Image 1 (cartoon, helix red, strand yellow):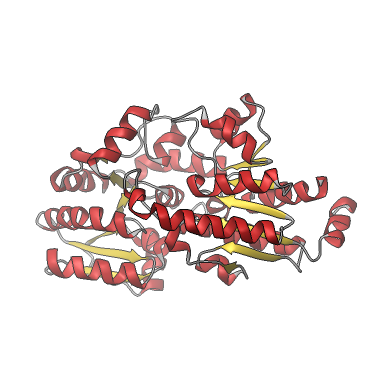
Image 2 (tube, helix red, strand yellow):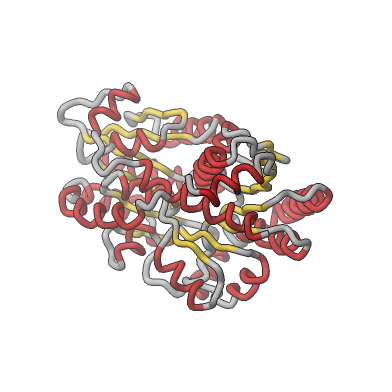
Length: 390
């Protein structure tokens, strides 16, 4: 550690950081960032809104993180009063007892207004994971610039957009690219999970999302696609569930819609589940990046309410939705969205994906190398520099 870092560590040994994550992917990022900050500042205290992984790292949470996890533009309206109440409570807490730094992790509709109020009060603010301003509603960049002191981007093309608009930014890469090895062993993952697969069976992982609304829409669709696949071959399916509530939700849907299928439900362990699979049927989101880094064939699908989709379709200006395709700049994996996402289309694409593993490997490795940049350490240095600057 250099002299400046040693001085910083001494000066902020009782550092207090406000931190908020809104869903499972943010919880993963937040926990890894917290760990890196703790290595530099062992006495640090974290408080805000945290998921289970962040709580394990020592964060105290004002409310359960799941209360912020809402899917879609229209769906949020039913929860808007609760979300605004939580936000007011959080801001009041932070203003009454100001932290040395505030970090919002993703969830921009919730966190950016918090960051703006805190920045106006003189509290340094950082935002981890850029909103998709490069893809739609680009004028949001001006509001973002008024809300944050520093943006931490996971993807290289995002950082270029911020530099163009003279917003302080760091491209930190993605922690998942640092955590996941370049090569993974499916047989080892199966042994870890205790999943037994017959020699003539194909193992397919099904990931319909982590939020209640996603699972409600996508799990029935994915189960119906699985039934069509099972009618054409010998398949075993495995579904990881992020928590007990999702486990019960998926278990009920499975019993109702596909009791005859060979399906195992797993409590957590989504990475091991994906690593064990021959292919993956997956909701669009951060999990598709994890599947990419695990070098797995996949079929990406998504559905939202018709009104949400109609609004988004008019605003989004990018050719692809899924992260593997965006990062490659071309279609590596099929994206089957909204009305096109039928059981028939999904099952056909899933069957086809089983023969594409070797074809995708080189492109997946390129993406992995591009994103492996010691993200959590780089992000920790960037946010602690804000305090040092103060």
